[in-house]
Length: 362
Ligand SMILES: Cc1cc2nc3c(=O)[nH]c(=O)nc-3n(C[C@H](O)[C@H](O)[C@H](O)COP(=O)(O)OP(=O)(O)OC[C@H]3O[C@@H](n4cnc5c(N)ncnc54)[C@H](O)[C@@H]3O)c2cc1C
Image 1: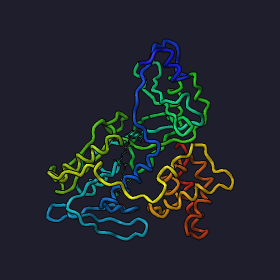
Image 2: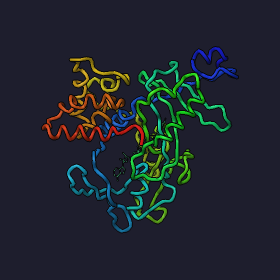
Image 3: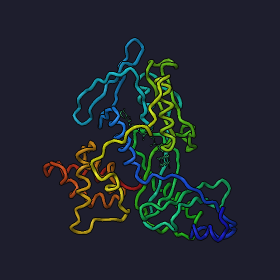
Image 4: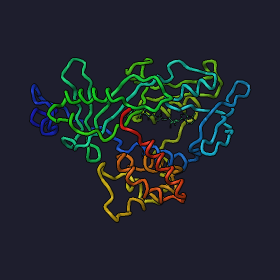
């Protein structure tokens, strides 16, 4: 526990009026979630998995009421694929209900979407630790103000959302209300006047359709046990931090009696490169100094080894240069030269990047 003075020293900008003290605790933080996913894929592939990039599962292959595999399509070439498998686990997140419906096995409540977002503000954090703050009104939401790559990340905002077919975007009026509420929690920081540099928006499962009350428990469904094809399972988790445990539980349901190998006992995937640090260590406002090509050299190995098909794969999903949309666009042309594309393809890739970086709000 911290007394008043120590709390204000840790959290300059906190409302001092009525403040009696604070609590300090430690938690894990993942600064680069895209790299986490790629690392997980490196581990999976090093231990026998085959990852199929840009392949969409379309429909089940059913034999005698049991799943026997999937019809899929390579969305890059249009090639139809048949994948044989005695067990299929549908882990398609917000799109899991659509896939289950396509298997003629809809499950009420498998995933009810809600909108969630974190906002990056173009200012430095008030201190070096994250702050949990609340506006001074009954039932006010707790927000986290997190120092992130030299700027301030604020979140998490929540709102109802119904349409999983539409990319999640935060409407401008909602963003305005969110920032006003955060401002009420820490008025001395003056965040209302600070430009929004980026909004990270996505979907989270809610307890009820059309609400933003978050589910706190995963849903794991054995479709065979509720009238659907045997061998088909669906799993929808609620957090990255519990994803490993949820994956274990889903595997226990799908392969009863078979224990997964403890991952700590597995050898690390072989890495020839200098490690992910080379592509994830950039402060938000970093730009390469004129003539500095080290950032591009660090990406050569990524392009070669990490199933990079498009420019936006590279800049938005394999390294942190796309954290800052303005930087991603500024470096797009130079990054496109890492590929063997002709000029037309390079221009098309840069246009696609512009669309996919997108506006920060709706
Ligand atoms: C703003 C925000 C903040 C968050 N903060 C935190 C946090 O602080 N801590 C925490 O632990 N968690 C947090 N989360 C939650 C966390 O991000 C999610 O729980 C996690 O990403 C869910 O992973 P998933 O693999 O289940 O689903 P997803 O990440 O949604 O992945 C599903 C995948 O399935 C693919 N797919 C869909 N349909 C098909 C198909 N037919 N064929 C093939 N592939 C398909 C999709 O392309 C997608 O890649 C946050 C989420 C948001 C939106």
